[in-house]
Image 1 (tube, one colour):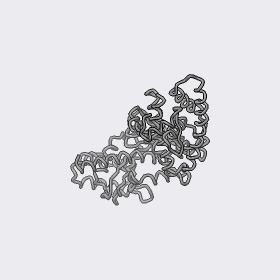
Image 2: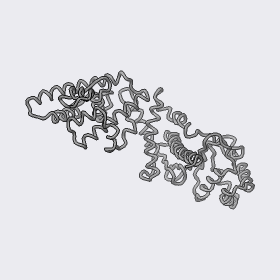
Image 3: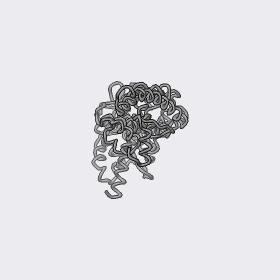
Image 4: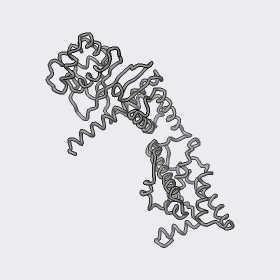
Length: 394
């Protein structure tokens, strides 16, 4: 791929990303006023809003990288958008918005919202530009517009709103924070956005592949309330990436780790082995998320690790003691220790954060020697670890 093609592909990808995040910002602005408002992607337009059973507003999003020329009544972007809007039935009268990162010139600036808006004068200048432009790409669209009668031209232009100089894909976070300011706890803005955007990314994919026909303002309000609840002092959020599906391929990255060797010492079957590794991966990723957004501190994790160690110690001592009289193999004892801790662990990092996979994964982290503690499953795990670390046969 050439440098130019690579740059163009990156620009297109950012444009799609900006469209999805713009949809989130726009829905957020409307949800508090009209919870029943319905949003769709790539149906009637890039973004469309439905209220009361009919389209109330269509949005075309235009994203440009770096310094760009102004958007004018001769721009291809403008006429491509006009061509889409001219496909609408004349009986449909939704608001038509062009949301662009460019700055509008003085002609299209007449269609900005506000007191200086002047649709008739904007129409005169658009007709003039359409007649004067020599751009071959936009010519079919300009000709189509010029063939409309004057009443239809004014009716179309009067419904157009130009939102120019809007944030680029990389600058939308500040707008999203402002939109959801009412819900965000000071100091937790970045974590809130990460959780909201993670949820929205999944929603956007489903909207685009049509497994989800639409999303409402109420859907967004419910999710925002849930995120706010997760960020309370007695709770913690789950990183959206942790919820993705994993398969056995994840074991390859951890095959040389000590906690995996400990799992092999108790002869876990293949299915339970990779799921234990998955628990560790999820737990590690979740801790990294919390630390990155300063939702937990190292001391809090240390206290939690001590609680887990204490639980393990009680179960380990009891099961190893029973093994002396029970005739069980060392592997069976180790498996029972793991199973019992998975069933009975009551330690909580926060009072209302209760995700069993997190505790299971944290036990594996301690089996790897993390957080200053060392646990194991095999009754002789300590001597085996010493042999492993010194290179002796175990």
